[in-house]
Image (cartoon, rainbow over all chains, first blue to last red):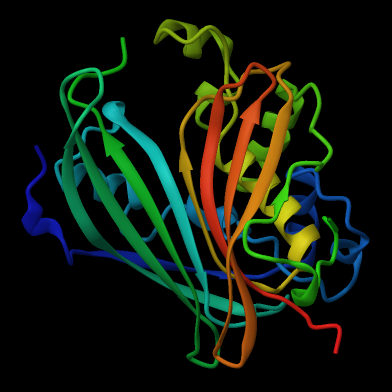
Length: 147
Length: 145
């Protein structure tokens, strides 16, 4: 059981510089051979910002934050991912992020036990102060560890 | 139906795209390359010993690898930069050797924010019929006009 009062909790932030080589590498990793990704000013693959999702944040990383919120990481699965594309992101942009817990709810699992869904929401802001992307990660905590 | 660079006029509500070429024989190398590109080195995706210890038959792909491949098909269809929303739910694991089958259905066609938009339902399943991802997308499409 996760306390619903964690909704709204700020999770800290991070930043990234959007680099051409990283865009090209990421496109290749999702099997996208569109030559546009080899150009100097490519668009970003829709899930590109995953490339910074696993960087440790100054506060000790997103995962450290999750365990502080009462989530047991051994029982947590990635249930879903959502993006809202608010503005264009280009190579050379500096994106700053801030994350918060946006939602917590429970559901009965199909095989018994309670599933707890936790949505963390990250807003990406560019160097001009424009919000360009909102990403939501839905984590699911099962009532028992995988065995 | 065009699965590359679709135009607003060419799509109707209810249209389905099921002729996207499958991604055949997904391999451990695909998962390792995605781990490197994304920085997600959860051992469940590259270390069979760890995956088997917790009861999985082998390593399995990152959910976001499959969501990334689906995003690649989507941008082929609607054009890079034209997505407005993209959401996925993870339903099943992708094991090495499986083939990905990707499909989409146009659910709504409308104008919003001075753009020609469509909503679509998305689906990825493997060659054994296991659904891996269901999802939705909203895109602004170019017009022929």
